Length: 338
Image 1: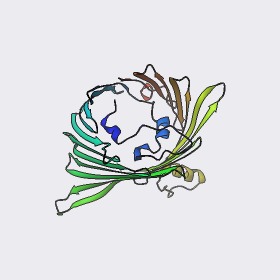
Image 2: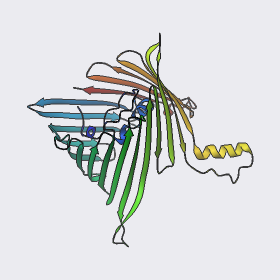
Image 3: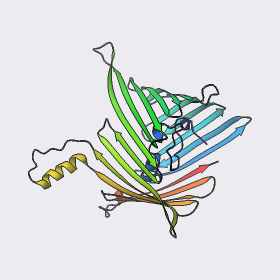
Image 4: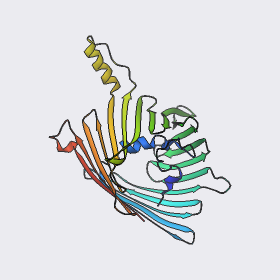
């Protein structure tokens, strides 16, 4: 069953020869790269279940999940929903070690007179007392506004924009958040820019290029992917490389030799390179492996057990410290949908 958040986020499109520029949102940019490097590599075991049923045009459903983290804590979540045409109402209860959070959400989307508009209001008893989201999607651009009143009496104003060009097979997006905090010495609120991120995605034939900037331009990530066929071995294989680095000025005051200067640059930039491979073993199973320069090795195997069940087994090993079992993580996730 689709949750309320799917109004604002599409499923990851498959890589094709042309860039998909219809109704693209900021979270869609680089979804293929993030799916290869980050998805199917869980660090904690969980079971997720989703059930839905339609009665006379009204859809009733419920999502639930139980997650067991490596430190022994258990995180549980339940989300019942009611959907009638373009309107949805749902409630969420999250139970974790520190507190129990409850949320009530009302959303609207795909209105006949406003097909590109979507809105959502969320009321909570923890962290965020109220959050309002509005979005407008066009064929070539989209705008998303997300505003919240937080538990610490602060207002956060967020704005995301995306523009794309089918001719250039490229899409670019920018998102920023401003925090308003009431000052005792001033009548007006103090405004500060808390985050400013940007993404650029380029798709051309089997190639996929993704560049991301985060933390006010301090962190950068570049991913290059290529899809290929391996005859007599596998029907589909994706090979990619990702490089992450920090934009920081190195300290050359104590560096005298070229080795010391290179070490200072490496300490400031903190570059990390990751190579990942995904291969489709059968029509219902796939395997992934990734290795980075820090010595972390990840392997995952996913299997579509049936049309209602999907299982993922993942292993993350620290090759630099094999003798320490706490650095190695084994996880199993099971997703049930009906």
